[in-house]
Amino acid sequence: MARTALAALDSSAFGTISGLFRNYGSHIMKGFIIISTISGQSLIGKLAFDCPCNYPLNVYHSSTFIFGPSIALFFLSLLVNPKTWKLVQGCCHRHVLSFYLAKI
Image 1 (cartoon, rainbow, N blue to C red):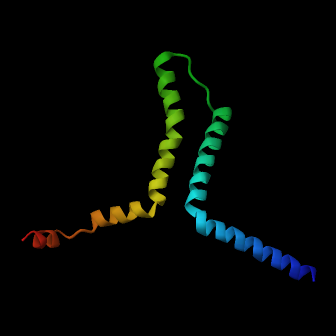
Image 2 (spheres, rainbow, N blue to C red):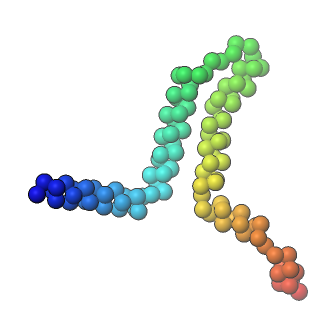
């Protein structure tokens, strides 16, 4: 009896989580990316960031530290986005002959 109750609880929890991902999957993924960016940046800031004291070097170092992870995650999100892949495939697989025939 206890096994059936646990199995029912497990299947209902899985159904709830599955329904959430089905309805709000893109929002959950974007939230996960935001949380991972902020937490990763704060963790690296506490562990590895040491700003140099001289003027031109500290500006470049700080700018790379602040904008580097966000630029990397931006390009990662471009790779994951299916609309980007459709756009790239549409631009790369066009036939020149069909373009000229449509113009005539």
